[in-house]
Length: 130
Image (cartoon, rainbow, N blue to C red; front, side, top):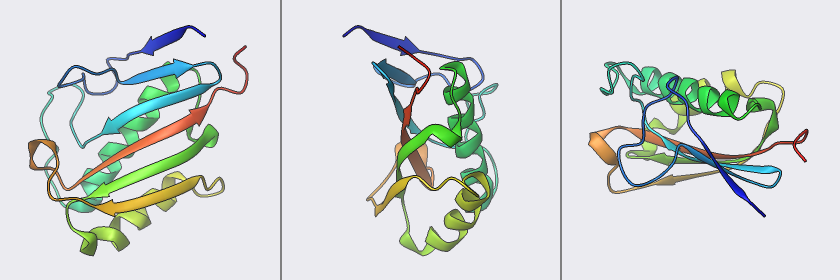
C-alpha cells in the first residue's frame, strides 16, 4: 500500500515533523488540529468556543484537500486542556456533526502546543478512493 501525504494552505502548516494528513488506502489519518489561523499561523483570539470553531474549520479544510468531508469521519479524538470546557466544545462540535455522528473519545491533557485550549484529530473514510 502506498501512502499519500495530504497538505493544504487552507489549514495551518505543520509546526513540526509531521503531515497535516496521511492517506493509507481508503483511510485518511488527520493530525491533530489546534486553533491556528491558517493565514497568520497565530492562535485565534477568543474563548473555547471560538477556538473550537477554528479547529473544526481547519479539520474541514484538510478533509477537503483529500477529497472528503466531515460526513466521512469515522473517529474523532478531542484533547482538552480543561475538562470543564467539555460542554462548550461539545456544543460547537455538534454544529459540525449535526446528522452524522462519528465515534469519539475526549480526554483531558496536561498541556497542548502553543498553550491552546483544545486539539482534535480525526480519521476519515475515503469511500470513493480505490
